[in-house]
Length: 333
Image (cartoon, rainbow, N blue to C red; front, side, top):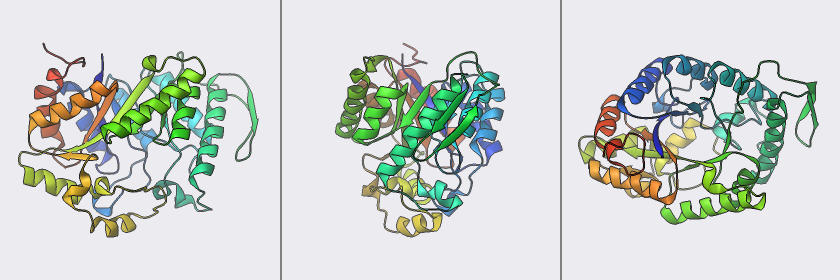
């Protein structure tokens, strides 16, 4: 059975407001939360950027489903040992509910601490070292590490969960996808065209199979941005005003400032959202859209409606779409 969860946009909503939406999501039939780890919003009008690890602790006390950061870069703002400690604490407090989502990072969030912003290959190498350190520490054994990018003096974690923490990697490129399949427990990737997603799943499977793992049994998470409102015009305006970054169909990892994104947003047109953000007031179109990703093989889809109309979106999708998806938790027939 697959499930539809809620993508909590901490870069767009006040953390207290967002906790309320997560409770509404759970009551409406959504299962699980993927929470953005941002230091800055994409564009200034989004207006927020709360610290995700503080927020996740509160989320755990106010909901019952699983949750995790989508995603944390453990290589710049944080040392990987700090992320291992944060993950172990949350998993110890909420047994079986916390998963750790990791990624190679974006300048928008990581360059706030300064230093040289490396190329994509270097960022992947840093992520690989970070994952090694985190896995060593989460084993509960004393660990040390001397890598090209990171050092860990002999130490261990003293607060540990009773169950292993699933580690998922955000990836779209073949090298990162194969690494994810080999070394980690699952994949996180954003919505894209069917052909691109098939290629992503194939690279992930290749890495898993290379070490004797069955990719069919591994978690495959999709973060999906949509724009639903009661009229198409409102849905389109929500996308253009609230989430223009969703219409930027080019790599964004090297852009450092919300103001730079805002300047680029002036060039975004409705057609730029194709295969990136479905803009529609038609609920059946959204249902078919969601079903297509389930049919591709994703077992967890986290939905983010880009407008401010969160409560209406959660209640409508919980009542009219989730129960009518095939092979999905909440199915009513």
